[in-house]
Amino acid sequence: MNYLKIIFYGILSFIERNPIFCLFFLIIAIVAPFLVKVFLYVILGFLLLALIGIGVAVWRMRKMQRQMEEQFRNMGSQQNFGGANPFGGGFAGFSNMGGMTLEELVRQMQAQADAQQRAKQSAGSQQRDNSTAETTTSGQTRKRVSDDVGDYVDFEEVKE
Image (cartoon, rainbow, N blue to C red; front, side, top):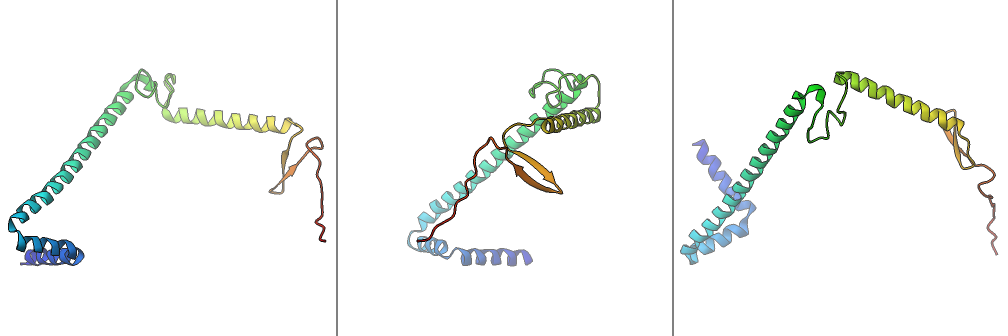
């Protein structure tokens, strides 16, 4: 009995949300009952097209998922993450890592990045050119401009 209540309340809520559609459908049912069958077939066709579209989308997503899983399996099964694969050879482009683990590779990459940053900072402090340079004092950044860059012109507005 509860299922009938749910169905009945569902129909009533549909009529409440779509009164123009339901009125149009009722007029067709009274005036031309043979058109109701055609009208229902059209609605059924749209529903079937939507279900087919959803089915195709799900099928393509599953196919892509299987392909990616296969690629990762193939990439992981190769020795040292190397060899020919669609991602350009090796894990993240590193074709020959010399038998190191992923953790060691990340540590080595971090050390290289830190060394590059230290080199850039030391080169930046040694290099003095005639353009603008930024200096930091007590957390504030100030711009320092050399004398060769240009002249500063101070002007006042004159009211007449």
